[in-house]
Amino acid sequence: MLSIIIPTLDAAACLGATLDSLAEARASGLVGEVVVVDGGSVDGTVALATARGARLVQAAQGRGPQLAAGALAATGDWFLFLHADTCLAMGWGEVAGRFMGDPAMARQAGAFALRFDSGAPQARRLERLVAWRSRWLGLPYGDQGLLLARRFYLELGGFRPLPLMEDVEFVRRIGLRRLKRLASHAITSASRYERDGWIRRSARNLVCLVLWYLGVPAGQLRRLYAGRGR
Image 1 (tube, rainbow, N blue to C red):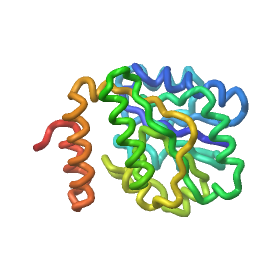
Image 2 (image 1 turned 60 degrees about the horizontal axis):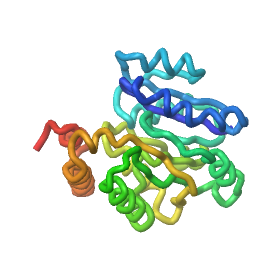
Image 3 (image 1 turned 90 degrees about the vertical axis):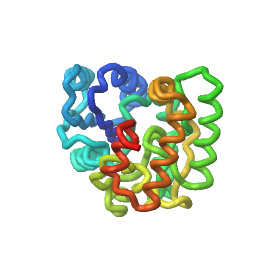
C-alpha cells in the first residue's frame, strides 16, 4: 500500500488540485491513504483535506517536522512525499506501481521529472536545469515528489526536523546511485517565480544551496529563502 504524505500551511488555494491529481490512483487501489500534515493553517486547508478524505495530522510548522510526522503516522509499505502545490501528471500511478513492484527498487528512491504550470520560456529553461541537477548531482528537490519504501526510509533515518533544506539533506543520504527518475511529471506551481522573478528566485535558491553546503544553519537560510535576509 502507498501512503502519500503532503505537508501543508495555508494551502487551500492549491491543495484541491493536488488531491484531484491523485484521484485515479486512489480509485485503483494503489494509494491506500493520503496523509495531510498541517503546520497550523488558518485558511480552509484543514476543512478541504478532511472533506476530500485525507487523514489529518497536526505537526510543528516546517516541512522537515511535518514530513517526519507524516511518515510516523502513515501506515503504508511505501511512501510518496509530495508538496501541496504540486500535481502529478496523468498516468503517474502506473509508473509508480511499476517502480514499487520491482524488487530491485526496495532500496532505491524515485523522483518525478519537474514541470512548471507556466508557459513562459524561462520555465522550460529552468526545467532543463533541474533535470540536469537531478541526473548528475543527485539533487531532486521536494517539488519533484519522492517515492520510496517505508523500510528504506527508516533505514535512512527519515527526515530531519529542519525548517529548510530537509529535502536536500535527505536525498544526500540516499545518494546519487540510489535515485531514479520516474517516467512521469510532477507539475508544480510557478507562482513564486512569477512573483519574485525567474532569475532572482533561481539565484536565491542557488545561494541557499551553496550556503547550506558551506555549513550555514537551516534556520538562517530560511530567512533568506523567504526574502527576509541578505
